[in-house]
Image 1: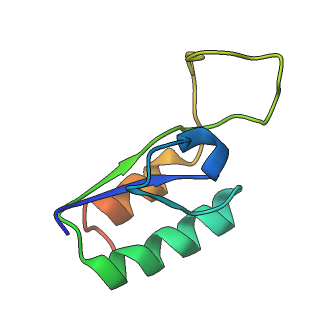
Image 2: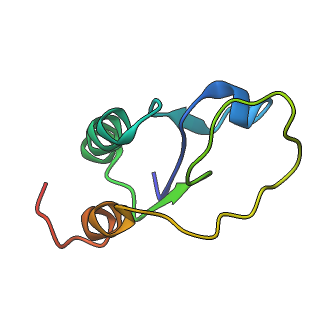
Image 3: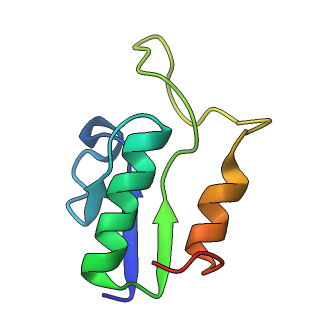
Length: 83
């Protein structure tokens, strides 16, 4: 598998069967993403969605103007930490 597409929950990727779902929250997302990386050994990981909540009043793409703790996730993806 060259590309691994991940998202937190199935509701974010309706009718997109190629996505793997890693769960909500930093711990769930990190743990399950690492398991998928070990299983599939992708060349690239594409994360759909950065932060958010299930709010039925929101629609479309919401711009994220800041994110915390993104560095750790990027370090894992870029190979700074050995898995």
